[in-house]
Length: 268
Image (cartoon, helix red, strand yellow):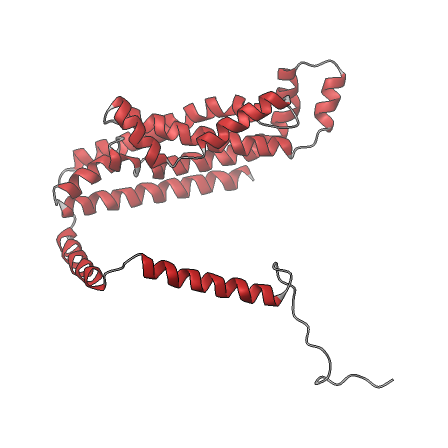
């Protein structure tokens, strides 16, 4: 039997998620045409873009050197952001744990499961900034609106992660405890929590880190923290002080990222 020469053997190509290379080509062409159409309808003004670069140069020139002379305002804003992040994380966890347990298909009855999943979906529908605007309108400017906003975001995120972890756990310990006549709370405490606790602690640390970053953002709409101070500085064209605030925010976020990463490594 004669061997196939390299020139006559068929060329192998890895399969694609589209099923065929022709469908992939059609999809990529469609995406390119859609991008061209979108850019043509958004009405970008090149002159306006160029003027924006000129203004950006002026803003950056006025930002340096940064003004740290108002250190008391900076410290108060940073402390308030940290307080908002911690309090909202704790409140979010308190709300999320029972809802997350009820949203697990393998633990809760179907009506309870559907109601809890509906709450989670509703909580994840709106971005924190939209919720922050809503709470600022209800309770006025200040940290209360920030705490409620980030508690809202924390509960939906943590509850969803907890429900998914419970649904993916091993059911052997749960069934064993049920066979002994253990109640629902005993099953949750002795069979469910030991399986999901370590991962949930990592998720909670991640959420605290996220709330630390988000607390500097929601202040822009008046929900307290250092973000509110930053918004006021920009509105007054106080760019050197705004630069000092941005440097402090970057340092705060970097510190939170380092701390959360260190704790997660220790948990492993």
